[in-house]
Length: 394
Image (cartoon, rainbow, N blue to C red; front, side, top):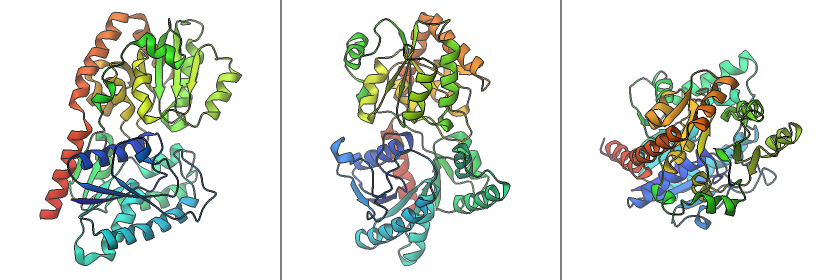
């Protein structure tokens, strides 16, 4: 099959949304399908990092000054998405795909527009919702008035009803999207883990030496976007809370943008307690995780997104400290340390539990390593292909 993916984002950047788009496409390609991704004019070229023939098509550089790679709303994306409609129209006309797969609410809307333009082809549209549009924007500090919230809630409800079939990454988002669609046609396509990325090279001391990480400390790692709606503010407060009483713990914060975290670390004099890794390439993340002892995910359920970073922690055999969410329980089961309240004290307590009980920490890490085998991108690809075939036959 030939799949046209709509990715209204600066693909590829080393963060969760882009990893899901990439890994779904790679799994589809591995199964013998052809994938074209329509995206913005900026982003890293995946062919430089991965062995793939995925065809990434970009809009023109009309907004040449736009360079934003991190997550978050921006009014200029309205213009970029108009250009993306034009690009998607051209690709649908010339490549004649069998399926259009729209990522994020904007991508779903663009896919639906293309479907209506080429109505005689009866092109099926799969809507891939990565989270709640309104909650995501609010978590980034937008939509501060009731009027704007009501307007964008109307937009979210309208777009959430589009597509012949919907897929999501978490149980929370499934319930959210199902509440807005007229029929129960939402399926969870879990994030996955590439297990072969974690094979070999498991000598922690060697990895730490190579990455210039403390040899004798207990390393607690966070990977991903260093922004508020991922829980980074709470995590920074946790580090301040723990630094004197638990000096044996060293925190590794890996991702982007680094400026806010660097400023906080300098102001609080946390240089001896924190190492900032920037940039963190997706292909380098497995080795960083394998060099550490505990994985951290302070993200709550505000945006209703799943947490792909947890699966990478599991692949590396780490115990994981996170909030008690259905998605996290589904991934970790007995391999997690769960904070039941979204407070600095509660999250710190769970880190302390992991730090002070080495035997239990390592046992949970082994549980996670084994459970990671249940979550693979290949399996996610197979589920997508089944959905595609059912829609085409229908």
